[in-house]
Image (cartoon, rainbow, N blue to C red; front, side, top):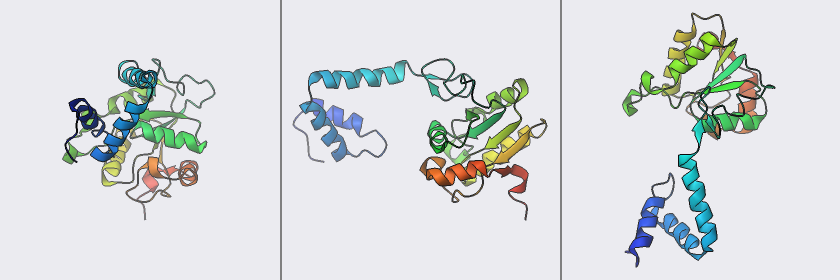
Length: 206
């Protein structure tokens, strides 16, 4: 990209281009658009972004984002608190919720085991999951992690850790293509995969 006429503009472009999927030229379009807006609108955006990083919380129970200590899903008495769906990230929670096919609770791991990326067991919310199984009246844990090598590795590890508890361990049906992330699956396929979940130990039996 050509040299910009303003150092201030250049700094804004550099910061915006750090966002996923945003290149320098797109960042420049965003910056110029903001420059044309009434200052009140830009101040509102800035305040919203500041609140995002200073005020937002993570649910102490499931680790999903929340405005309070306990998220709306965990505090909803109409949810089935005997079923916990384990997902990789917050986007997966949103994807499953959009299907309208699941009425249980969630547990966000915050990633999957991936040694090549430096993500190990202790980097994930696994201990908290085990603690929930021990202290809560959980009867089923659904492993809804990506159908990737890293996702399957994490599934195997979790299954091994949960075997000693008197619960059902299931996984979503393989309607999700191998290598796909849940957030990119269409709602119908994802919804059916949740409804048609199968015992984890049956997945690899032939």
